[in-house]
Image 1 (cartoon, rainbow, N blue to C red):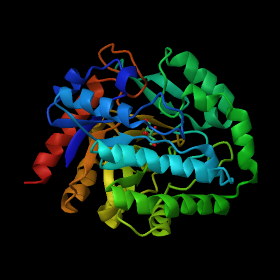
Image 2: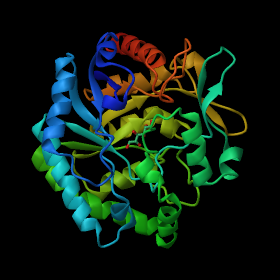
Image 3: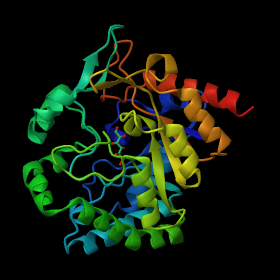
Length: 351
Ligand code: DNO
């Protein structure tokens, strides 16, 4: 297991030297967030990113995310050009030593929450998902709410370039059925995975967050059966999974240790966080320890340890604690506590 922390490059208020001081963390997971989805990541920029991280004494072997252009997800003829560009980006990343690329196949929107900074009784705040709120809002209203609440910091998956045509883009999905969406994913994998194999890059799809349909858009990676279906679309170790406990775990029906055991050889990266289910189906993102949320963390880490997992792992979203301000879910303190907690569990379970 290699412990990492997510870092947003030049857009991150958290310096690499602080990440380096978190015990057990040997690398960062990062991306070139300023490059619009679909455009090639130039080799020189990939090299500069690697050099900056390495100079801080950290490795950068996982990218999160190389976003997929909507034309690929929509399955329109223009997709072939975007797929070529995607492969070129993978080639450049392989040249700077990247081993795993985390990406998602969610239409238009990445993750969604009703509240970015929901106050908890202990005085911290966290991301919250209210089903009622989301049912009664629109994607545009949600984007405006995030823009207002996030203090001018771009959120991953809610970048301005993605949001500017949000209504039109969602409209384009009206003609894409769930089955057509599976076909579009298969098409992408068929073109990209042979190159990932050649380049030594393991692709690791991120589950849909939350794992149920939003705004009538199709969903793929939300249950054990659908993960199996996705991995079977292209049988190769390079067509793998990012196991995100918080995304899958928002549905109490998902048995996460069982998912880890079932697909261990295809899991290349793990996001491990806890969340608290509320009786009405809402949830909030809790601190990492079992006692704070609804997921049993030793059971999850044990499943990885028993499977001999030697991939990358990161604590996921944290609360904002100790009056820290910053990017929702991605402050330093609570994620550092999460990393230390997970490192402790790992030490015990590997004995
Ligand atoms: C949110 C993240 C996601 C994730 C992407 C991967 O904080 O978990 O934005 O990075 O879905 O492509």
